[in-house]
Amino acid sequence: MKIAVVILNWNGTKLLGQFLPSVVKYSPEADIYVADNASTDDSVAFVKANFPTVKIVINESNFGFAQGYNEALKHIDAEIYALVNSDIEVTENWLKPIIATFE
Image (cartoon, rainbow, N blue to C red):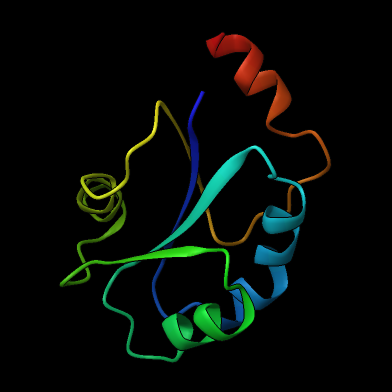
């Protein structure tokens, strides 16, 4: 089962630096994406430099929350999408109940 963890970002370098490490560490079953909502800070460069396994989808504009995710998801192929905020910390095995539910 193909899972994508998708984090919508807008000018969130600080939040990505604080919370993305737990998502990367505790999501081995998933492809992780940062969907950037036309940030004007260095978030995209920060992710590329510090998290090479994280894929980046760049929205052409800041579409806001719902449309930002909808635009990004058009470019992500998965059976399950876990949409998470950029300010959450996940723990070990957090995806297992989600996967079990879908199976």
